[in-house]
Amino acid sequence: MTKLHTLTSNLLLVALFVIAVSIVGYTYLVVFHDNPATVIRNSPFPVDRSEYKNGDVIIATIDICRYSLFNNPQTVERYVAFVDGLQFNVPPVTIYTPAGVRCGVSQVNLVTIPESLPEGVYYLAGRSETRVNPFAVRSVEWKTMQFRVVQK
Image (tube, rainbow, N blue to C red; front, side, top):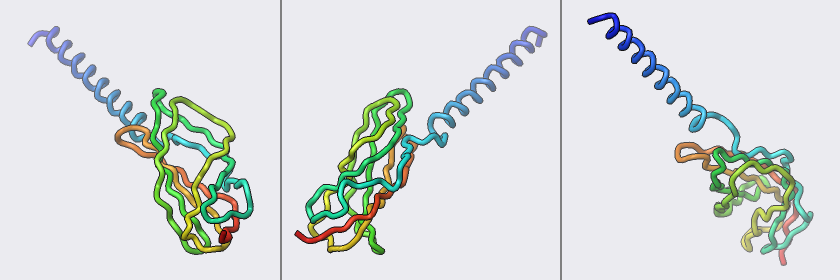
């Protein structure tokens, strides 16, 4: 082998190594890196009333920032439970958020109080899971202030 072939082979090996390291680094940053998709800045959330009846909608004031990579819309699964010592889970809800970075305070309809929920003092405990790409899900947990549920 000539010196030119040896030099070319070594340069090719270095180039392949750099490409492999770049692919692994990109995969780590985009797929597995621990960037939050959602940042909540005021948990526990204040709710719009201190007393609700079964069938009412609980509206909370949320100070939140949502981030989406590459300006793709995101799917968020919201899991909510009424807590008063015991947990009363309600079915999860899927919401779709627009692309980009959005920060601000907003009024959000969190959940409708089930007819089967007994009277008592509760707070909502929830988890929002955001699918940031096909391989990764980021979650954030939150709570609301306490409120009373009374029968109609």
